[in-house]
Length: 266
Image (cartoon, rainbow, N blue to C red; front, side, top):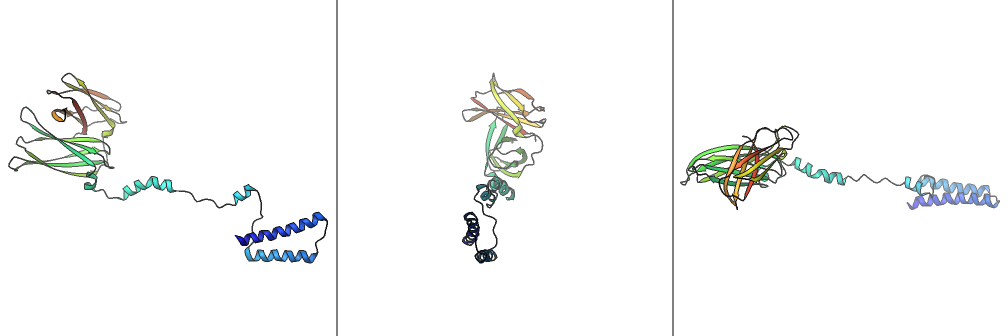
């Protein structure tokens, strides 16, 4: 940088000398002019000719080196998705972020039921394959059964229910998760709420999606404090986009709240 400044200074000296001579009316000898010209030519040969100097801010700006494009924001935005796409889906790792709550119920006729409610707090949409082994009080296996919970989207909850052998005392469950293709109705498109009514609740289910919803079922669990005191479960009618349906759901025990869950039919 210092070398280029020297060239500019020399060029300005030459220009200033010629200008001063012209303005003052004094002549410059040919030998002096040639000497100065040779010095400038030598500097040009050594360091290269530079663009004509200008003191204007616009020209200085035009000769400034362009700043490289800052792609850090774009990289940060895509880093999580890129990292996720490179990771291999692992059932055990994903399962650590999915809570499974079991609710067991014995009705007045001696029938036993087990409901498993899944809360998906993972980053993945999953299908859950659940297998249960029922054992009696002597630890003897009474039977095995398997079902699949489909379209459990990230941030959503759903359920699977089983009717058990009447002698069941212990349930051993195994759950395996796989990434879901989300074919068919999405649970996130279905809204469900229960409003208190005589003898139970009125269940209102709404299809908030853009497509028709079919193959749906519901589960209402009635609680007195934290104890399950009853349930109601059945298939839902097909719902067109934007359509809703209200159904009565009966409980024969005192209850203080009713939780509603939606799932795709088996």
